[in-house]
Amino acid sequence: MTSDKVYAGDTESATGGKEITISDGNPFAGRKAGGGTRDQIFGTTVYGSGYPGQEDVHGVVGRDFPFFYWPVVWTPAAFNMPGRPSLPAYIHLADEEYGPPSNDSRPGGPLTTIFLPSLDSTTRTSFRLISDNYTITTLLPTLRNNCASHLSMFTDIHPKAFDNSFPIPKPEDVVQYYRGSSIALCLDGYNNTQVLMRPGEVDDATFPLRTDIALMSCLNSTIGSSAPLVGDRVNAAPSRLWTDDPMSGMGVSLIFVGVWWFFAML
Image 1 (cartoon, one colour):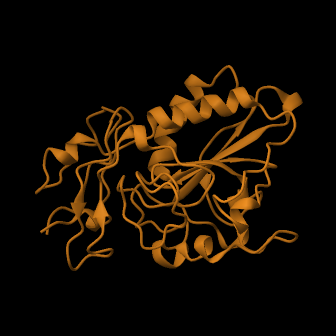
Image 2 (tube, one colour):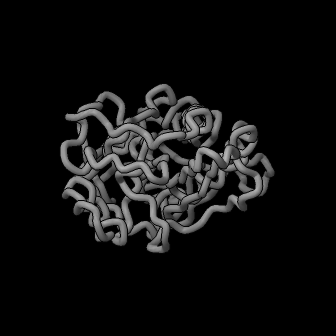
Image 3 (cartoon, helix red, strand yellow):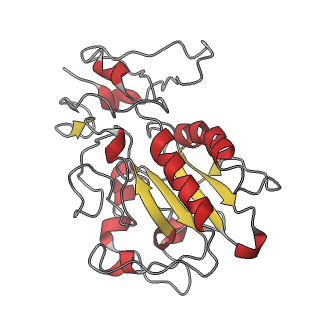
């Protein structure tokens, strides 16, 4: 067995790490981890998309980890909101396998969300991004910089825990999953209930009128190009995973202590 510390991810990495098989004695033993590349990072609106070469599969239970990061899970409050369909099993069973959004064993830390409103108030467009805390805090400065001409800077954009507080992003709000469904971009007011009934079999619902498509495009392209991937530093040391000094000021490193048993290899 090897390190419980690992280099977390780099916004400039082109790969999701060397593919390994998780060794016996560890959770998810026998599953594959790594092997994904940045050009395979985009999914669809369907939960379980963003897995390279598995475009027609939905759900995340029992799946491999092509980018090492775990898929998002949906809060219990999103299951039972008045006036909406119940979540199908392929969505709500995920928390039994990966734990609740607050699970701090998740690579990158607990699930976190940020509110991303449009600068053009006439569109009444607001997006919410969900992922592990490391991914969100790493992406936020790049999103602010790249999308400054579209994002409202009058709103205090700070990461918050993805918990049962309202308003809650819901599975039918998702306009795009990324990186093995470990990142979700949601649009307030989107009601794509097709993903709750026949995922991938029918066309998605149309976006609300006056949706700020320019902001959506900017967020989408920035997430695709800058979401952290573990990269070649894992590839370089397949038998001994290691990390940069997190105090070095490089801005691309993070240590997970007692978390990354996930990477343990024989």
